[in-house]
Length: 372
Image (tube, rainbow, N blue to C red; front, side, top):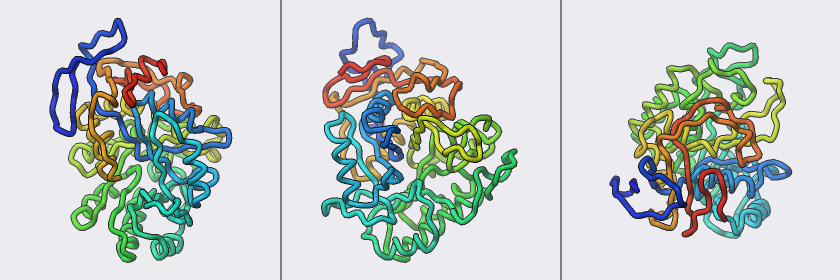
């Protein structure tokens, strides 16, 4: 079977045992994925059991949980709760810490801070940078002082915000952080051309990385016809999609991340519906459909996230993903293992899928079924 190793940027043929009646001509083995942007809900929503299944079905062996859980990941007690709930899983769950919290997880080094899903003011930002110990800061870059559900140019009567909102917020976070001694930043779910231009400029001076989601690479604001396409940051126009894809290819965007934001149900009134889309199970398919470049997708979905977080990884026969690159399918969220059925890409036709996932030496998932 063909094997692609992004650590060496090399292709090879290996004898890999697969379930019977498997035709391997169109299959490729690659390293398991790492998602830098995942949400877990608890309290009746997406828990670690359902999230683990969804992640495995999507080819992810490691994911990074964002802080806007209930309760927030901002105290040592909450971290301890999550550590207990996520223990003894096949998937490894890492956790961010709210930039605005008081968490000191058992004296351990903080992996990274995050502002995701937490409305904050400039005063909050300054106070946090003044008081927190130094670590990577992941930022949901948004000027929360300015109300708006969608971007300008979206045909809607609901509140809109300027396209430049994101870029202004990025500049504010990075420059304020630098003033107080922070030196490593990761901008989450980039969605606008001004943000890309600013990030490209800031990278010349500062240690800065960024990510993009599958829905921002595939969907425009012209497609917003359901509450499941209400996401934050919002969808932009078709030209922005092309700019985002180009930024992945030219290296301005470092990481492909899901921003898996599951909701069991959503209010059907667009004004009051929750933001977010459930997509971790189809993330690879969406990225591959958008970019049509397997080495590029694997590099930014598997290797780069681990490098940014300084998480060691070796590609071996114990942990890998089997991909069927020729398989085409229509997205049906009712078949998701996730409790979140709110998929923005519902009904879309995607190409390429995760056929199997091997973790810790065992083939745990194959063709829609869990083997152990």
